[in-house]
Length: 495
Ligand code: IFM
Image 1: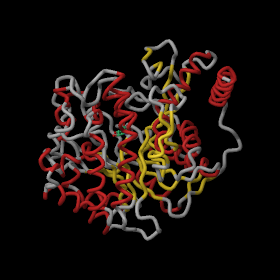
Image 2 (image 1 turned 30 degrees about the vertical axis):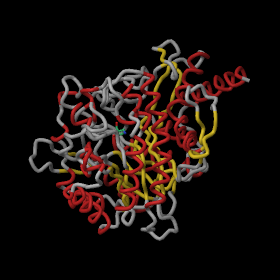
Image 3 (image 1 turned 90 degrees about the vertical axis):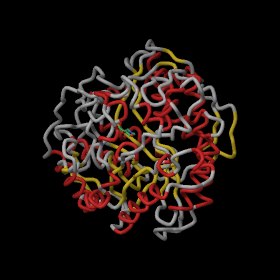
Image 4 (image 1 turned 180 degrees about the vertical axis):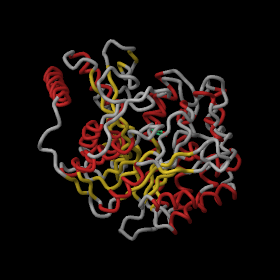
């Protein structure tokens, strides 16, 4: 059985490699159309765009020597909570009807006592109330993320990394579930779309294996514990939100839709003719793209990541109303590379030896890979929201083509059966890109960090997205008229 699987893998990898080498196929449609009611918008995360979150693990981590490229300080970013109306006007100016944001636990409950007593910060609540009010007034639907990489320092402290942190802690699931209940009750009358955890796979692997994200741990056992606990915490948060949020904001008969935002990549073998590389790439795909979704959709418990679940947990079955898909590109896997328990080989994504153009952080620009992960996601039979897709492009030479080509793949995937309901570009504006500091500029709106007012300027992709959102369609001719990609020297770090 295993042998047949390997042969199939080799065959499909060869086919994929060949199709990559082929010129654009002539059966390409001349245009794609998107479904009525499609959500168009952009995404951000609290810590990346707000100020004043020093009381978090990332606040501490960013102050440690050598953690952030060019020692960037999170507070020097776009200061979004001081620019709410301006940013919401930027959204409506781009024709958007949706915005993905995160609410920071540390802003609402700055210390452990305030959390335990359920004594939220009035200032913290007022800030998010104002954001929701502005969005609701502008008829921009919020999609709310409840955990985007960041814990309050009373839950995770990178200066004490020998102790269990964040999701490793015994009380993490209980704290997170309580957080979900409280936010569902408070903001359920303003939001119907919820993301429990952003990119659990990235938080676990980069924070607990690569050591490049808070809390800066390098330990595969701890990484595996984090992932197991994230699945359980997501399932409990799913139930808590459904119990707490019973207001149907848009009157569609569904008070709350709850999902997770997965960072999906294409995992390709370093050498597609080498069976070991093919098997290693397939295992990476399983560990990073499928393991969590299998856990929360089918209830699979595969604690040793070997691809054969030990059991099914009924309390985790069906805990996703949608698949939140973040797509940026491709990773390569070589069987001979660093081998790690549970994961096998460690995939690489920066400066790959390929002909593909590169973004400023050295990631391959690979719109065809979007088709691969969309088809993979469609296999779960859930509605799909693109919760992130974007490019680091300081000089604004590649973003428009990047957006257009990805949207074209999205349109084609829909005709193959992917039920995509929304596209939220990463990001609305330039922001703090974690360990890479302010180097990568992912913003649709460029932020002038030298300006005390942090002026925002639209990049060229804004008008392109606006046209697509207005017509709910995209012509191939529009893409053909755009300049070809330019690979820049990539000065920015990557995870
Ligand atoms: O900036 C991040 C975001 O926080 C999570 N997804 C990937 C983005 C770009 O690296």
